[in-house]
Amino acid sequence: MRIGELAAASGTTTKTLRFYEHAGLLPPPKRTSSGYRDYTTAAVARLDFIRRSRTAGLTLAQIREVLDIRDAGREPCQHVHDLLQTHLHDLDRQIADLQELRHTVAHLHDRAATPDPTDCDATTVCRYL
Image (cartoon, rainbow, N blue to C red; front, side, top):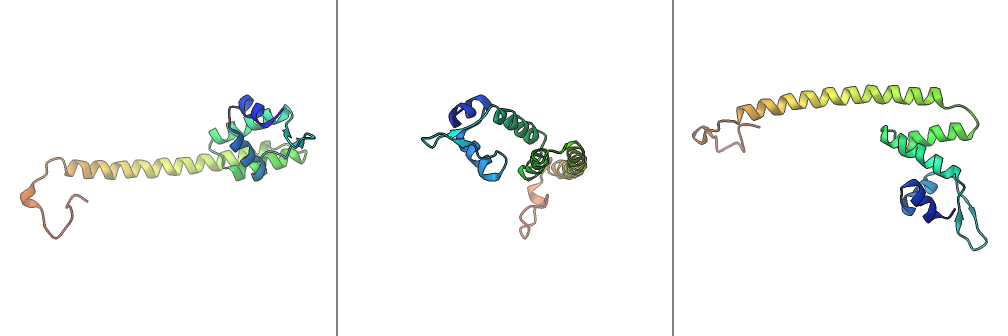
């Protein structure tokens, strides 16, 4: 199938497909005699995997690692498990950081709830921050 057909079948754009090919996520397809890319149906499944991986928060570099393992004929399951475990740890840390930030902002918001212009120091921009 040509690049436009693959884009439509996978719900992406031709620009994205060219980028994925350049980034090594999508192997270069065979070319027709007139020079058009000629993708196989396996490209649709590969693009679906890339989409699902991006939805799970994996980076393109991590996705390429998984694809390289699979392309080498090995099972990437343990590698994916390890990536997801690390990603979960990172998400937990980010959530904790965001909860701490929310607590700080809520405290500042509460302090600023009843502003008193007479208590404003002209040498500071704002006493609430």
